[in-house]
Amino acid sequence: MATNIAPRHTQVVEVIDTAFGTLVREDYYRYPQQESNLYMLDSSSRPIWFAERAMGDDAYANPIRRIGEDKIKCASWKGFDCEIDLRTGRLINAAFTK
Image (cartoon, rainbow, N blue to C red; front, top):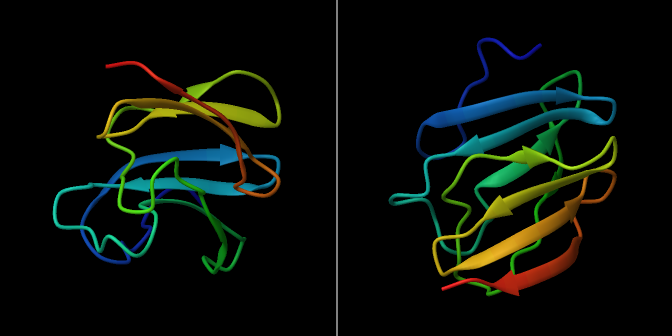
């Protein structure tokens, strides 16, 4: 499913197939601030969840790093290294790094 994913708002910059669905990260530049640019799609390309953010107007700007079968890390534009649960999109931990 990882190929031919239509972006919601900008441009798809990263796609990772997981046991929970397809993880998508869109370009953060000009992405609507009210919605996370990191999200999970089901097998029909419908959103399952949008990743929680450390700050409401932040965006995921760096490549996704897998840290387990059910967790990832992704750094945000505002300087947070965020650990996210792949089952729910919930923020597990957000460490400020700048």
